[in-house]
Length: 139
Image (cartoon, rainbow, N blue to C red; front, side, top):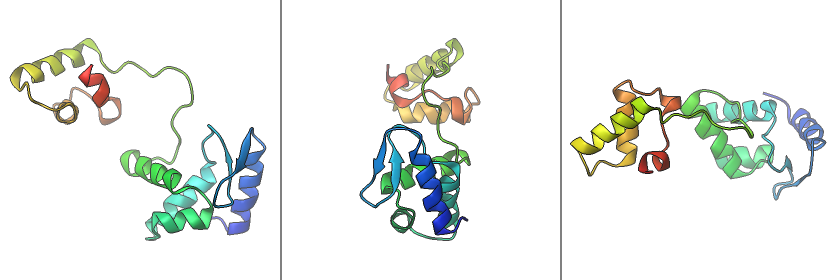
């Protein structure tokens, strides 16, 4: 983990990348840009040490929502890397997936979209990181 003064210096360098500001906690941010990897790594390391997200937020001067989002992504994917900015997402509703969804709906018309997502993964039709979203299934 980085000492606090190194984190502040990293945040200052980070602020040079665009139209940023100071958040309510006194931390530097750049709208629409992900936090630097060293700060993301510090968030995960502190969480592993048992520090509560609200305390991590205050200590690193990062919003609670940002801390929660990074920890959620880390628990879900095992990665601290941010999502892709811009570009188009690969299509996950392939004909095979659409057919499977239609079969599930025919078998159980009251099945929820989140249940369909779980079933697509369990049946090996989709990988966990390539399963259609709930809203995509509902469409």
